[in-house]
Image 1 (spheres, helix red, strand yellow):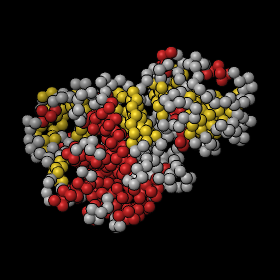
Image 2 (cartoon, rainbow, N blue to C red):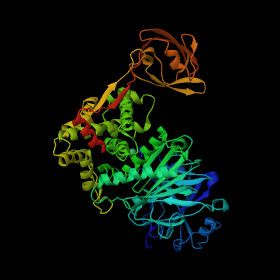
Image 3 (cartoon, rainbow, N blue to C red):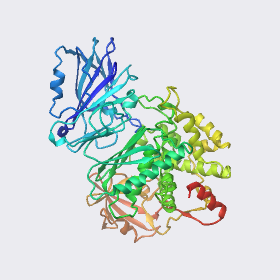
Length: 623
Ligand code: ZN
């Protein structure tokens, strides 16, 4: 393809976790071509400086560009030998300009870069390679050719060398050029932005396909899971996807993508998800997956389905409906927006709501999940110091870089954001007498700012905060700007008890005043009980304990990782105790006046009366 940017990637040494990448472009900038690797990946708001994983890099001008490989190359082919076979190649000097930028000396071209990337990050954000599988986000491995981002970008995915990899396949939502579905070979992106929005998995994975409103969805599961009930997973995820497509497009039932891929990597311990325009990458624990012939809904499986629902919802909300600050992304620095409460909070609200509406979980499980979120928000005094708008803005340095003081200093735009969404949804339903809901706001936002995001080049289709506020009123016919500003820019607690009562849900905080609590969070390290966080105003804070302290004894009885709760159960609020703890390697003595445990214990219960509230709840949950 004329003028396209060509990449070739091969897991060249899985044992050393190295990908080899070749980048070829026909027309380098005559002033000297600049190349750059993104500093962050959209969806994960922290600078990660992926270029630090580039191991070696060189450039050469070549006499001609070889045609892209159309069929799968034999495993025995040696890429280095093939590249060196260009007799007219001339070394081009590469100068590093900053931590993620290189400039090639001016040359006539075509210009070819060769480099290796170290891939040993077990997360959904970068790249991971060993003998079992290869996974990468292109933002971690493919340098951007500055000034040529809008050209077609072609990728030749190669199989690792050796017979051990002969059964490997490829899973990605990147459109095939000449490769067969699930095969190695050539794939195509219209531009760099699309290229880095399709993660790639290579290996021997379990694969299941289902259909949701005419669109094929692949579930790709890498990693060992004995006796996996894949059929059940498929059935549940299908309901979630179908329900979301119908939410955004109730008339046409048209999905925004031609095909969707869930890339799931299974581990013993770990959790994470990252959204893309036609796929998502998930890191999930083996125990989350259902076992054949065991139909019970475990907490782990419910949470896995919630994660699928969350990332899938982003296909609309943040991958197409975007904050103005992300349209387009600046991949080299922080992109500040006060709207992550909408893009992550509203998505977090709908992820579980969709599970309930699609019948995957029941009403009690949905209310229990809201109660859990309420308790986690109420636990931290940071909620009175930071609004969700501020939390959004500071995501790069605060939410994504949390330390032991986080609960005292910040609020999560995910959890509180989802409660803001709940409060707004119920407010709209009540004020419009059940005629409108947050669904209407979402749909209008989708029509105005999302549906055509990739279809036409409007440049700045992203939504600003003021546009979002105006859209609430346009979609509902209500005047909501002041309420929204109070919830989003304020730090007062939300009136959830009052709002939930209107849909027949009883809100009760059942904290026990006879149990004592130390006002801290601890973790078990070996046989020790270590303080992980101290809540400001609690017993531990007032006594002088700090994160990192190792608790030794309570009134001369040894504290282990397992027995603190039992020891405390013998006391009542008002009792005085002596606690010994190590700070680093120095033994300290603390006198404590015990207080009632102030951890919130909110529960939500669905009531059957009055009828008007029951009717509202049924409309809300679509049951
Ligand atoms: Zn999210």
